[in-house]
Length: 450
Ligand code: HEM
Image (cartoon, rainbow, N blue to C red):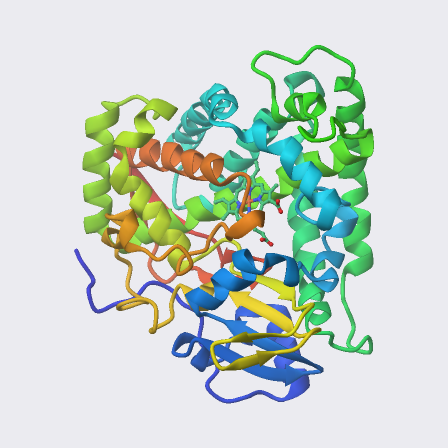
């Protein structure tokens, strides 16, 4: 059944300005409420809430901010503040020279040859989730299943079995930390004054301390030892050095980056998968076509890295899911030098909001932007590089991009070749953005073997 006239879940967009406190309260519940309706029809929306800000949905301006003039638009300290207690000065948060050398050292860790050696873990995780949902009865929340699957993958590729951080410690800590700390962060980004309470900040710090201790232990017990075979990301990072200066990471830097991989690679990939499953439930004709492809390529077995190039339509579904529901739905930067974007004057100190959710649904950029249509990605060259930014772009583009996409294709293809997903009526997810873009209420599906 193709539901051409229906659109998949979207957030209700405010067409009238809210009062200051009402706006803040709405934003803390769901940061997507920050977006006015004109963010979906115009290239740049500028305004002033405590500080001047610009919401940028214009591909050439995004190219300037993220790539051509990236040094003039660093990540803002306010945006970083809430992740700092968890990720320290690791790759995701570092700036300037300290970021540059870490990126140089970590790049080879994500080289295709290292990743290929680690992909059997993805196939195993796809088998595990298949067995779990085969055993289940009644509707299943596929978002929770995907969180568990993505955590199994990232934990197994990051650390050896003997030093693995227990799933319960890591998963719960990361999840609750991001939620509590995330609610405060938008207030900081917009420089909302301190009299507006930041609930949960102290709780968030407490939640992360166990995880940090576990990560410290993992690092200490691997340093100075022979790398495992195949080497997990932590062992590769211990052996890595800056090709320019030879500098290696200290125990603390290794800990920060191990946590960076766990946090950056866990929920994001789970979200890409969960939203993909929601969408193939929404449009059964897409699901049928994807299943035919998966069954032809896989013939009953779970997908491996070698199958990925042959699973083109499944990949298009994941790409389209990340267009409609970008797991990282907004980034922010601070302008440190004056600039002009289209007709807009940017002053040093202005807040730059890059709401990919609105970019990916902007009428100036996409035809029929709210419709689910994986065929948009049939010809990758047809998509402007800066119109589609689920992984960011420029020097700070996601380091785990190939890894995340590969994992999503392997898991989705395996599941679609074996199961039919039918949405549970009345339980559509609500897109809720608290740092990441989550399916509020879960992705509930009836799951039947095919
Ligand atoms: C579908 C999955 C993923 C999505 C949508 C995603 C998205 C992003 C985005 C948007 C950024 C840019 C942040 C910025 O410019 O401010 C980023 C950075 C990063 N991501 Fe990912 N990510 C994914 C998976 C992963 C995985 C699996 C890993 C690691 C194993 C990872 C590691 C990183 C790191 C280390 C950075 C920081 C890079 C730097 O600043 O140099 N990501 N990611």
